[in-house]
Length: 544
Image (tube, rainbow, N blue to C red):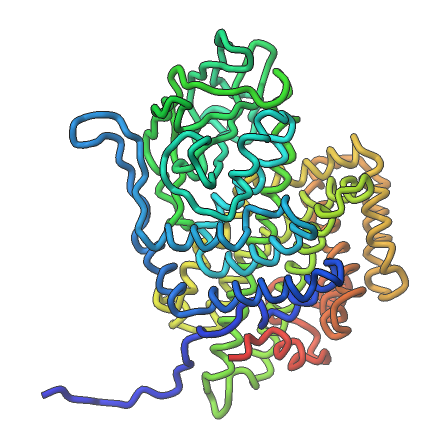
């Protein structure tokens, strides 16, 4: 006979069964703002469908399964043949298939594709961020392949396909394909010019044999990879397929999988090449130039991915505090908790707004927008990804001890939160890239100032921040040691300018007061108490 000592009360319901997209007012507004009006209704419909799937109990369960049962490396079959396969839980394949089917690799094939995909990426990150790695790499590979029209003709239709075809077969037999990337090596890390992998030309024009290693190879189960290696004329970009045209396996030896802090559903591998067949992409000695657009695209995805993690953390925190009572009332109504939630909400909205602006610039593709992206992407990547971890940890704290327990889902977000700051160039790399843009591309600063100038005289704190940034730029003494400070200011001023123009007044006021005007503390929950904090929190509520 079972006994009972208490009745469970004062616990919030699960945050599920809702439209992740439709509940995100900042995201919905950004999509409407940046798309051609003729596309908005269709885009909202597609994204709401994805949002309802993302908020379903079924996908929540698959996400937990994929994270709980990480991939396993299988180097040989039972007969001793080398196979170099990664085995995934079925939930991983279900999620990845839904991501491909939702068009997360198809931005290049339709009008407004980058904005639509960016919104979908923010939504999909909130399900299980591990699947976003192969989706991001596949999406980003397209501009690199376009430097070789012959290769693009074969691979681009497969990479932008909305069919998830997981079988290992030659490209001509596939209905869809995924791509990974291998740039870094043990001895160099971000300094890819220190790579030692060798590329020896073969008899067939444009083909090479690679010998060497990659210390981090993303998504090793992919159909193909863009890698960097030293050819006779210098560092060069290559396409390495896993399956050769005759159906055989390319030499692609998986040494081990990384045991990572987060992103555990996704495989990251150490790879050895030993006479591995490869096809050159772009010119010899121009590897960085060839692959740079791919890197830029993945950096935008780091911003979007962090925005998605932040949004989900805020939604969970607000949802919990809406239903949880303490000290005689709802947590949501307690002035100090309301301040914390409002501060988190402002940070989340600023990240989403900036991420969608970057996507809109990618859709435009004009010279002015390309120049703008040259500063805006590394600055945004630096700042938004750095803000992700403290925000997610603070959101978990809003749940108290429950937020430290795996079943809440917050620990998975906490483990994931530092990732985008590390991948595709860590903080110093991004800050130095901002300096390179300033020094080598004068048009980049002009484009940036033209962008933030659209908000001039709308808020005195923003005007003061723009003036302060220009003062910083006027004195370049010791500029490398100040690079992080500059990158932060570029990002904050840009976020402020966008919010002043497009966000509700209370959001823009809170951001400018606390992030630009100095009326805020180093921790979240230190907004000026005179702001309409309840309105800020209500805007961020998932509405469940």
